Amino acid sequence: MRWSDPTLHLLFWPLATVAIYILAKRLYRRWHYWWTGPLLVTPLAVLALLAILGADYRQYMSGTHWLVLMLGPATVAFAIPIHEQRTVIRRHWPVLLVGVLAGSSIALASAWALAHALGVPDAVGRSLMPRSTTTPFAMAMSGEIGGVPQLTAVFVILTGVCGAAMGEVMLKWLPLRSALARGALFGMAAHGAGVAKATEIGREEGSIAGLVMILAGLLNLMLAPLVMLALR
Amino acid sequence: MTLAALRLRAVLRRTRLLQILLIAAIWLAGDALVRILGLPVPGGVVGMVGLLVLLALGWVKPASVRLGAYWLLAEMLLFFVPAVIAVMDHGEFMGALGLKVALVIVVGTLLVMAGTALTVDLLYRWRMRDRMRHAVE
Image (cartoon, rainbow over all chains, first blue to last red; front, side, top):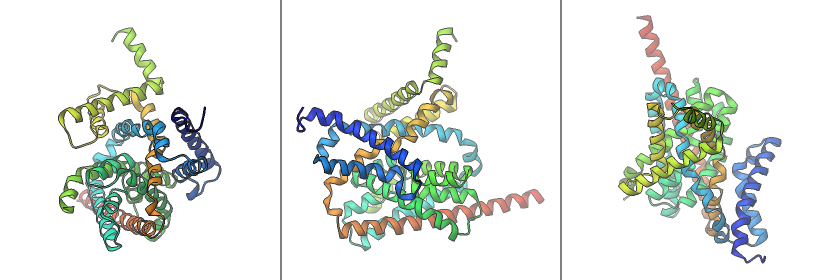
């Protein structure tokens, strides 16, 4: 089989991606730093392999686009943690709702204002707006408000990595007394990576972070038509 | 419930792959609904709301999907790797634009963290104080 054979790319890239992902998770279990997380290492290693083998994006995508489709069932799966957290939701819903509303507004407004102040192109600015929410929701919202979903996927990762790293420092600076606030900080600002970090700090913080992450994703998607009106 | 149905349920509760297939079927149903009705939300979100309703009604027990659901959530990173690789087609981020984007992300994330955490903490303390006062009265 020659390297230019499309069938080879069809088979090789999904296998290589899964293998790199598994290795990256092992690596993180061994060396636990903020920059060794699979969130950052996996895409970088895939990019490096693509560069070494001289393959392009289209060849890569031909065999791996079905992996992105799996984000659909992953979104459905969020029903389980929501269902299991229903007592927490019932008890704290006003606080959670206002917190997520405030966080989402700040995320959307700060991305838009900073992007404009720095002269970032409009499509990139729009792709930056949903970056605080978890990937499936962020990509869906990006498409709704005129951004580029693939760019948003990259920004979401960068946000997660830097949010999980900065969150610990922020905890030392901010006078937070409740686990609710500490969890919300991570879940709202750094989605999945933040939830993982919050879980390291405490069980309650972790489950609140997960809940806030999902609520923020849903709320952002509901806000998308409003954002569209505001941007026009 | 018949014996066969009970046995099927027992298998479903142990088999992650079956649960993933069940969740995927719910997603496909949500996707079909979105396409037929022309809804402005992704099929995954409709499927999620559908599954929540099924769980609330007790038609689906959490144990029938829990293993599959937590697997999908834990491995979610793998699913968006191909989307991220699209950055290959965007060479324009090497340079000034890339730095600007990084600045937006860092400053924006700091603002979101501080704003969210302080809002939640303040509201939580108010509610607790309120509750204490009611308890004393």
